[in-house]
Image 1 (cartoon, helix red, strand yellow):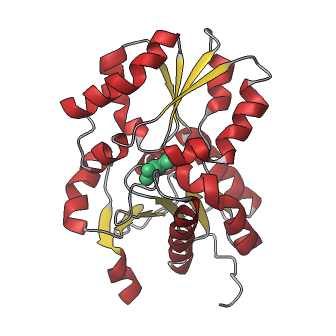
Image 2 (image 1 turned 180 degrees about the horizontal axis):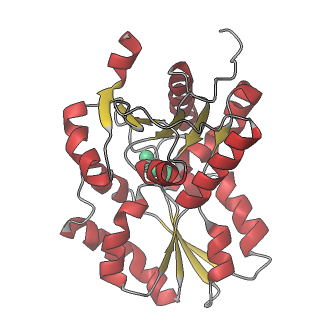
Length: 281
Ligand code: DGL
């Protein structure tokens, strides 16, 4: 394989997640950097990643980032806490300066700064809880501030969002079960440590009213993306052409199944394709 080369500033930003969750981040990027085009890749064929092995997560993430680079992306956001936990170092080593890569880690830092009860909850996947990125931030930020971090996990939540059932009674019953211990422990800041979970915010607020302040990484990631683009002189200031949607989405799985779910999660226009169509071009 030939050495990766940097792209032009007019190229799109690539955003990747195991499924639909990273759309919560893509939308923050779109709002914060409205002149940029975004190519979003959802690996719906392999979602969820949360219960996969470290090696599987690493391999699937590398495939996805390589695909986005092959589409001509100038920067890639790994909009998945689970994928970031295992893949950032090898990918950055491989691409170096040719492709800046933004990763995600649950937003423990702002939650630690904001907590009054000194108890912060982190709702994340098994993979993210096992990964070192979260452990590092807990050790470096929460422990010195004497803030207790209480984690919660459920393998059922990502599939609810993937099915467009984030406001269903079954999903709310699961959230009630998973988050009640955190509420009882006095958690006042709940970190949504998976990019699917901002789509659960309405259900969480319905169940727990003002018990938790919900904290996610979306806006911080959009700002970091802007900073990295500036640093690499990759910022695009050109206005979008009218016939060019600013959000182009691709799924590795079934496009017919993905369409209505994506339409319910995305604000504004987007177009949707299957990855094989793009590779065939
Ligand atoms: N959105 C991914 C994350 O942030 C979901 C993980 C999964 O596929 O289980 O971790």
